Image (cartoon, rainbow, N blue to C red; front, side, top):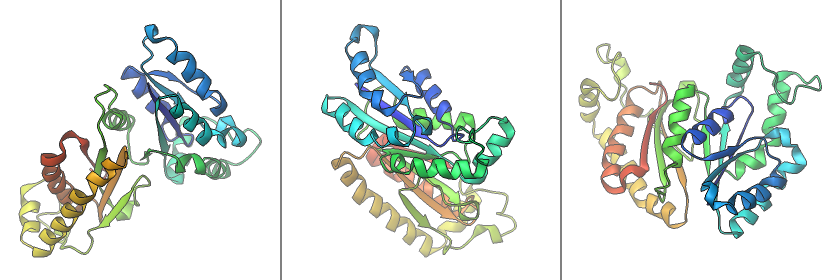
Length: 286
C-alpha cells in the first residue's frame, strides 16, 4: 500500500492537495494525530476488499507539537510493515499566507488564543519545521492557483500507481519575485545576455522563436546549457539509485520570462529523450 502523508502550513493549500488525491482515487483522511496514523493504515490495509490500495492522510499544526514529534517514528513503523510512505509538505511565503487569510476571512488555527495572525504563521512554521525536514516532496504554492496546484499534485505523485523511480521538476522563475521555497537546486542565469533589453523581444518569452534565436547567438548561453545538461544527466541516475522520489530544479533569471524559460525548455526537451515522463516542467512567472 502507498501512503501519502500530506502536511503543511495553514493556508498553503493542504485541503486542495488532499482533494486532488481524492479525485485521483485515493482514500483520504484529514486532521489525524500522528499517533493514530499507523492504526488507521493497519485497519485499512486489513480490508483489501474495500479497495483501499492507496491512502492520503492529512496532518498539521492542529495536532500539537508533542504529537508532531512522533511523526518520524510513526513513518518508520508504517514502512516496517511493508508500506511505501511519502510525505508531501506544502508551504508559502508569509505575505501570501496573510493575503489568503484576509481574503477568506477564516481564522488561523493558532490565533484562537489571541495571537496576531503574523505571529501565528511564524509559530506554525516553527512548529512544522521538523515535519518539513522529513518531506519527500516540498511544494511552494505562493504563485500557484488552485487549479495549478491540483494539476501539479496529480502530475508529481503519479496517482495511477504506475510508479516512477523519480519525479524531476525543472522550473523557471524570476529572482525579483523570490526564489521558490521548494527548490532542491537553484541555478542563476542572470550572468547571461538578457533579451529584455531588446525592445522588440520584451513582449515575448523564452518559448518564442525570436528570443530563442537571440539567445542561441551567444556561446556562453550554449556553454551554460551544456553545463546544466551534463550535470543533470550525470546525477539524475544517482538520485534514482538512492531511491529518491522527487527532485526540484529551479532555474532563475531576473524576471523569469526569457532566459530561464528558454533554458528549462531546452533542458527538458533533451532530458525527456533519456528519462521519459519523469521530467516535468513549470514556468512560475508565465
